[in-house]
Length: 175
Image (tube, rainbow, N blue to C red; front, top):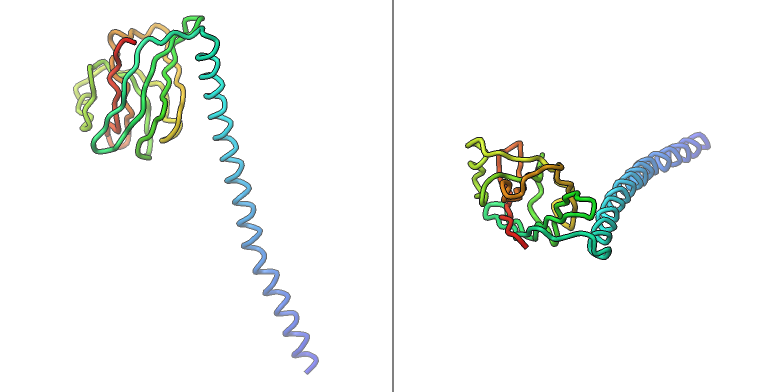
């Protein structure tokens, strides 16, 4: 009988220890998610600081702006091109929101507008890659390569490479 009690206690202790392991793993996973979240917050803070610098120093000049549209993938917000005091061009997306997707990029295209079917890229329309989309919601900045001819590249496109899909476009107009 004592053996049975000892075995039961040992079994209960083992079961208790095993039930803690998933909890500890979940806590570790949560810590990793928190670290990723902190990295994203830091990136957003850097974008916000750059935006604050551009806006409040009075040194950035607004060159062009346009509102996003998208039918298949609802996309909204504004794209604005700023020229900093040193001549550097920056594209700023504000109040931005679009669908989430794989391999989504921000590009400038040499066309007046971009429709949802993305056929504008199949026709060898020239484009300039500004980078992978930093997030499907929120304000964000993209550096425009030096020497980019803004009279030629008239539209900002949120473009999914994997599915050749235009999520949204913002035709740019002089400010």
